[in-house]
Each structure stands twice: as C-alpha cells, then as structure tokens.
Length: 275
Image (tube, rainbow, N blue to C red; front, side):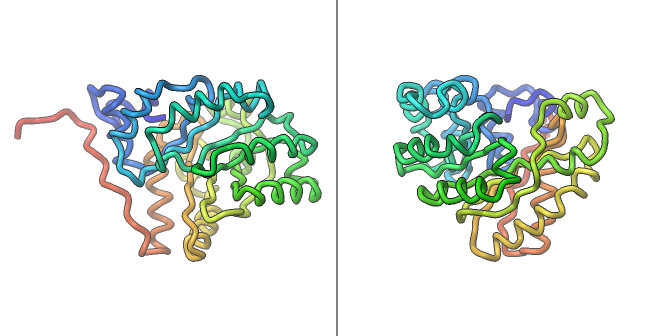
C-alpha cells in the first residue's frame, strides 16, 4: 500500500523511489497491509529492502498468496507456502501476523482443512484469519466452530467492518465500485488473542468515516486497557486519505489512553530545500 498513487507528492513526497516511499509511509503509520503478496510472492531480496527501511517494531500484515487460499483452499499447497515463507524471512518478527484471507465460498464444513493447515505452519509466526462466508457470522454453531478451531493454534479472527459503509447508498464512482465489490458481513468485534487485527471501511467523507469508527475506538481502548496490542487498518473507497485518517483514529484512542505511544512525525512531503 505504500506505493498508492494518490499519496505520492501529496503525502509521501516527490520524487521518491519505491524504497523511499516505504520509509516515508513508516513515518505516518507503524503497520501496513501487505495486499500485493496475495497476487504474487515478492523476491527475498525485495523483502530484505523492506526490512532495511523500517524500525524493528513496524508491522507487516502480509496476506498469503491466493494460490494457497483460493486455488488450493489450504490443501496441497506446500510449494507456494514454502516459497512465501522463504521470501518473507528477512522481515523476522516484523511479519506479525500472517494474514489468511479465505474466499466467500469457504464455509464451516472446511474448518478442519483450516485447522490442519495452521497446525502445519511454523510456530515462529502469528496467524490471523479473515472469513467471508455468511454462516460464520449468523450461525452460532458455525461461529463457535471457527473460534474453537482458531483457539487451538492461538490464531486471530480478522473482522472486515463494512457495516457503516453500507448504511447509505454510494455517492461517488469509488463508493459505487466498493458497493459492488466489498463483502457485507455483520459487525464482529470479539478478540481471540492479545493481538487483535481490525480492517474498517469508511466513506469518501472523512467525518462520515470517523462517525462510523466510534465502536472501534471504544473497542481499541478496552483492548489496550486489557493489555492487548491491537492493529487497526482504516480504509476508504479510494484510500486517498487513509494515512491521515489512521492518525486521526490513533489520536482519538490516545486521548483516552494517554500512555499510548505517539506515532512518529510524518516526513515532510515537500521538496528538499537548501535553507
């Protein structure tokens, strides 16, 4: 996400190499979603450059390749799993957690395959699973089955909260595109581990986005007071203001939990000057 076109020059400065953009992004936020790894596994050398550009406590939440989750459906995917794990080794503990996003057709009857897969994965990593099948959210038995399965390997359940987004019709091309492509699942905010991860989708209007995340501010404050370490990702349909909104969310939480460490000061986006 640190190469998002809408952020260049305006938030991340110009001109910037891809490496500079990550370093610049890390001055805005201390975690990033690794969505590109869903489409292609990067080279180990590329990942090593990522590690060199961020602090040791920066978090990469990297999505497992779709060949593993969607094509093989977690079964018989040893080759691509090995390639992925080998590639991300340079990140070390910065890869926390690994993100397993499952297709909407992956239902309760396939939970045993998920358990077998997670039990075979190295214990050096944490894991977080995102499901989209409606039964996991509306069927109490299916919910318990998944929660119990994840508990056996200390894995987290990632909610992707789109409930606020779908409360009113879209008003822009970006919102209309998200309206047809994003999942519609009920709100879920129960943390299973000490490292909950949340994905939240707002609207084009920053104030609407902030109004919709009130529940998550409350949840994050509660988790912090319980000694948990949550990671929150803020999205909008075009993600143009996502880093700004992420810092706004952090500020709201920190106003209620003053001991929460401040985010770094963003690197200026303007051109360098001599004076």
